[in-house]
Length: 309
Image (cartoon, rainbow, N blue to C red; front, side, top):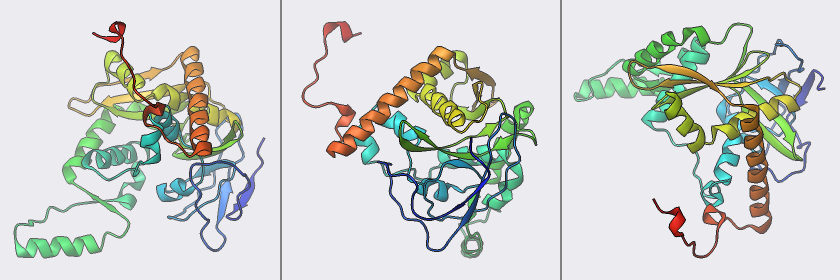
């Protein structure tokens, strides 16, 4: 059981083959680490903006994404990519901003932490950039944005409309949102960022093209959500957090934004955990050999008649 601790950014406490190796920012940064129990706990809010952070087992609240990304540890996304194609994982350029990614970020923020929307985003007032004056006003507005990300009024309204439809599932005050979990698994440093934890279960909000049982089952297989669910349940249990089930709240992106709640059987979670272990082994083997084969295969692959349709 972890006690309530203070972590000072400094030399890493774990020697491993983590996927990144980024130095800690100069100076000491104190981070609150939460004591874990079998019920919801009060967590100290930690406001950290874009620093590098060493790996340290614990539960962290309010880490921004650049800080989270700097922690040298494996992620669920690493494992779901490695098991399919180590070559793509090795040569990935990371996430690049796109309209779809921006909308996903806005949707998660208004659903999980609506009170933080105006701290993270700024709504474009709609300058007429066809005119000289409009271009100048837009440029001046952009200079004042700081760390905020611009989005349109229409995007915000659509995200809020979706939020209203699933308002029964909005995290309650006693729930914990956007927790960063750092844990050891199979001797390796691992990390993850939960959408929300009720004290008994883990929930994840998914925007989907098709949230029907047939459509979302396809997404579970295509995007390996069963590995993600198993990974986060493992993370919680490694940190002595109660985690009975992992639930997906899936909502379609297109109007009228239908939604459904899904979970996985114990057998499906066990399968996901086995695949995660397989993926971690692939990653470690590739690092050891410094060889990252496309689709983890070499040579010519032949298809037989039984594989045709």
